[in-house]
Image (cartoon, rainbow, N blue to C red; front, side):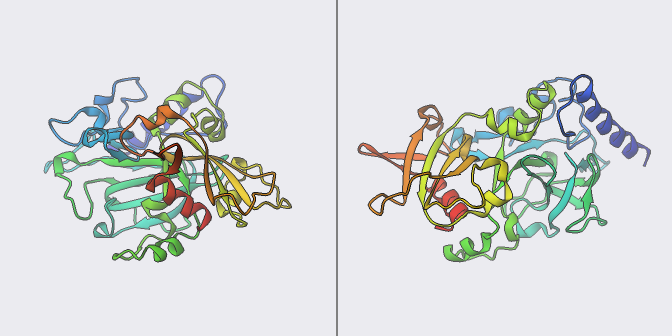
Length: 337
């Protein structure tokens, strides 16, 4: 109990260190008791790599798996405490104030294993944070529970469905990002997947992450005041025009990411996507899109973002550009098309 209190106290100290001068407009805490990032130490002091011969960056965010061909949505953070049997003993802490939006208590239901999704509705824009591969979840937590920054959510572990994570590679998979749709089940049904969606709107398909390490590093440097400032600082990967009369629920959930007015009428939307497909802005098209125009048009794209082998958003056929399967999935979820 004493050790747990010390770890909890450290997390709070770590948080307060970020507020010495001109604080951002929200509080942010590291999700494990490891002090390495707060002390400015390197990746090897907090990231869990995928195997003994793998680079330490395999535990980071981006195209870091399978020689750059497999995407990793978050950070893998290793434990600093283990019990006598070698099991991770670290508590997991909430990164920000929020509410519990989803709990998966059955490890076999997801590749995330046992996991928690918090939504931080008081932020601008609201973000989600996800904590996966847990050994256990705080039994007092329920969907809708209010959570304070640095509150204990559960215990680090190695839970997962399918692939077995070795005990010695127990870790926390940690994500921060945006949710695409409130109608995920509708999209899922159309795809006719063989497995059941057990996770409502909080399946990994419906969650798009940002780079947590960049988010924390820029926060530490006081480079932004709100998550909106952070998102505005990200480079644009592609801008897509979608012809539809539907107003995406994304616009209602994240009004600060849209220029739409409640009274505005449009038959199309221009969507700006950032690195790996995170939506940065969605605005109604000012002029009516003609019936001859395609439902989906690539307006602009950043060629530098196409150089990475995974998570490309556009593909070229002749002189024309089209959405990749990944970008098409994001558009389907955003617009129900």
